Image (cartoon, rainbow, N blue to C red):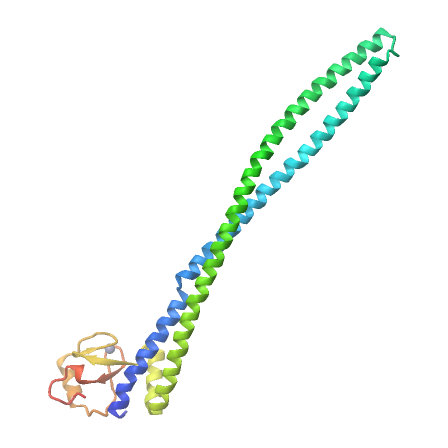
Length: 252
Ligand SMILES: [Zn+2]
């Protein structure tokens, strides 16, 4: 294939635009902000779960406290009733009096045990208050971290999008200026190799970096400037400029 050497050189601009578009696409997939956001979301789930666990433990203890308090009230009412009975002097039977005093002693012991239990549970419940406070503070902090990570990700994506939009516009302009046939070949090679065209610089292919041997250089020297050349190693179009290192003046 033949193409105007100036058009061939413009392919290098197109290749540069495409390389940046490829880098942008790669950055979009591997943004550190994505990993940060994922971690923040994981932390958020962990903090929420931990808080729910503490809240559940606290409400379990609240229920236990309620039950104990009700039980203590019942025992106290019973004690009051028995004491009232005892103080009324209406019981004359020695056996009945003895039973009543025995029951009062039992109720008193029962009440002491219940009150000790209540105290112990209330202490545990109080300790949970501190845990709840810490858990809520931690949740707020993690929510903030997640929001920050999401904002940084959005900013990074917006940057990439504006780079892409700019480069795609440049690409459109370049494509409009290049011969269709040349563009078709470039696109075919780019699809297969990732790069469509590269500069031949200091006798090396700009895509695969292979240094051309004497035979290949001879062939390049003999080729007309219009001839579209390909790297024998990697297949991309080789564009000749003054930097190509082709002594003898046939390079452009
Ligand atoms: Zn090559």
